[in-house]
Length: 98
Image 1 (cartoon, rainbow, N blue to C red):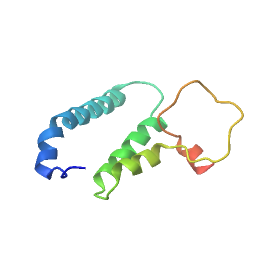
Image 2: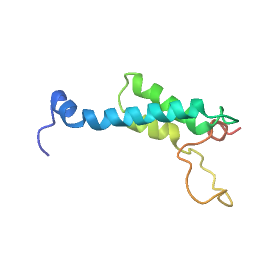
Image 3: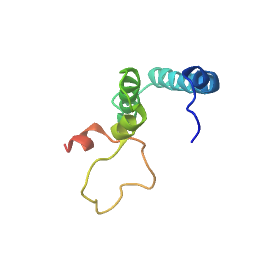
């Protein structure tokens, strides 16, 4: 394994890519806020906002903590999947066992 990159090198290499991702997230949240009808309590949007809070808390291992935030931590198998595919986050009620 080679010498790790300097902070400056990481910023030089990856800033523009991640700037675009932040703008994309901001556009999604703006679009969601402008949308009409029910859905203000959508757990996926709450999960994104909770992840942003983790990004800003200054603590290490942000990627691991975000993945844990979005993961299903249940240990009991279910009889049948409710749908085909994934949702990308777990509803808070499902995480809390409610």
